[in-house]
Length: 228
Image (cartoon, rainbow, N blue to C red):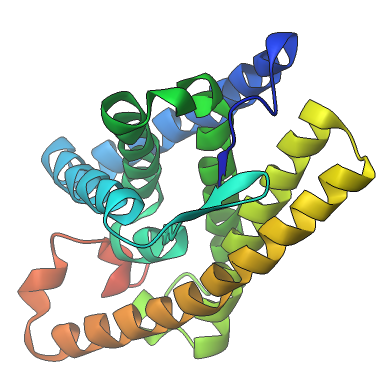
């Protein structure tokens, strides 16, 4: 989901700054709400977990270039389920920024676009969860279909934003469409793996909740307690 350097250039980069301003302000509002609900200490702790995890996802796990973008395992829906939307948003944004500043400075001009690509689908699945999951439902009790829906929706959102940035940058020529197909085919690995990881992580959280409930207190409160 790292847009390759040189695809979006010049004045078009301003579109990325505009979109990241929108999702960033909303993420800050979510963080403020989470701090009031759970406390600032827990918000910081969960956000640090997310930042470390995201940095590790991008640098340690397999990743490769595919046409117009790099393919990474992101686990955005996993972070959402385990840590909550605000810590997940902070982790994705800060983790990506650190990765760029420390290890991939060529990606910095695209940073705003790449953060939007990660955060907009996260905000989207949070909205879907509010509407499709009953308020009293613990996330450990989600049906597999519900978890798969959230994961697949997040991945589809990432792909859609990559396509958008490429079309903004270079248009819809034949070569561009071929590169997008190459990216989509490569990204299918992520589409298969990440939903399975979500199911495995929820199963682990369910097991921890049965005998080690204190562990979950540092994670998303919605995991083991229904929300009003």
